[in-house]
Length: 162
Image 1 (spheres, rainbow, N blue to C red):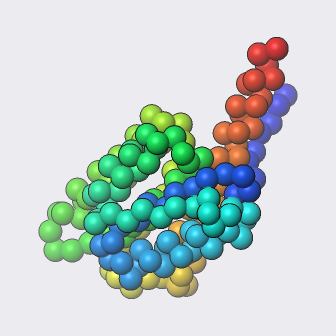
Image 2: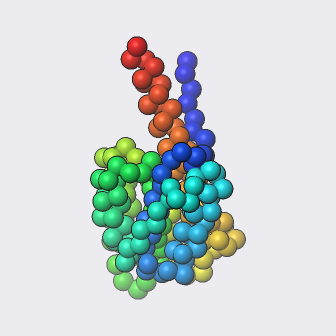
């Protein structure tokens, strides 16, 4: 029985962090966490790009465009949607999440998910380097593990072709 599990390694891979400018105090911290994680796990700074978009709504469109380029082994999507007084939160958070999920399936490229959906700014800050860690770091770690896993699965299926 074959068993596969990816390791978080950035060596020899290309990554892109796609981030929302809206709630930039939060998202900049998420981006910093993702970049720190990627570099600490072997990614060269020259092999990591950062793409900024206006808001979380635009994340799926930008991620689709970078995936079309076929330049990247994994994506880290960073954003923060904070609940307000209207249902706008539900539409933006839900559709951005759904769009990213669909793209991951369509392109077969891992997308680390650091799109915070919180009730308050304080909750978002706690997840962007505060008491709850940095979800940008966590998403980058997951993206590296999945990129490695996909490589193992591809190599395993190639071995079975002989």
